Amino acid sequence: MNKFKLEYRAFGPRALLIEWPRMVNEEVLNDIIKFKKMVEEALEGYELIPAYNSLTIISAKEINHESLTSQLKDIYRSTYTSAKVQRKLWHIPVCYDEGFGIDLEAFSMEKKLPFERIVELHTEPLYTIYCIGFLPGFMYLGGLKKTLHHPRRSTPRLKIPQGSVGIGGEQTGVYPQESPGGWNIIGNSPVKVFNTEHENPCGVSVGDKIKFYPIDRDEHKLITIQVDANIFHLKTYELDDTGK
Image (cartoon, rainbow, N blue to C red; front, side):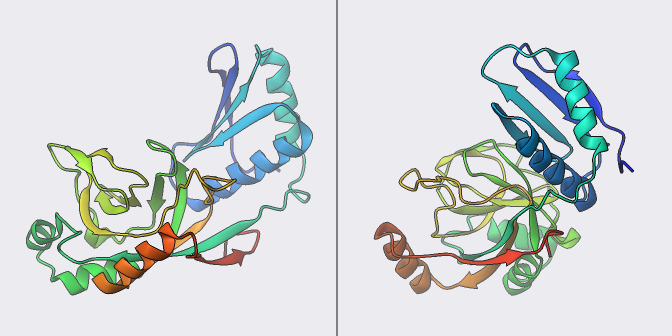
């Protein structure tokens, strides 16, 4: 039995967009990830891009949308027993020092929360990667405590340093490269989630989990040196098929 009613529509001559109900939750995300795996096992020659409530299927050549839609509907109607999805939990260090958290003081005043409480609330959840985009390796994370929800800055900055950890609306994330940005910056991580020197530049995947842990400036400096020397390895743990 299908869990959701899906919408299929042409997304240009070489792509097809599949949409789930417009909600952000893990049940929808798990369904998308499993369906993606099923499509990868059944069809060849396509690039599949998952997001919050959609899966985009891209081909190097023009698509017969009607034929492909029919195939996809058959795949979705089949069982998910063969779709085993490997997911990981990543532990990412963050320094919440004011020198890195350029919006931390203003954020603290507006929220009427001391720095220590902000750090506690930000490092407590197990975040879920719902989407990767905006920049290569930029993780849109769900699971931020409601107390920390905060609108994006009215005026974006032209340069946000690499590794900056920010809050934008109901989400949090890490800037994988220096870029413009309008999120509230509360810290910095010395690790590189996206690294072009690796065979797989972006190690994280949609559906993976993220756990932040606090470090001080000295630890940040040490890890930065280790990352530059390519000897630092993030702590990762395998999750079961449900993402737990």
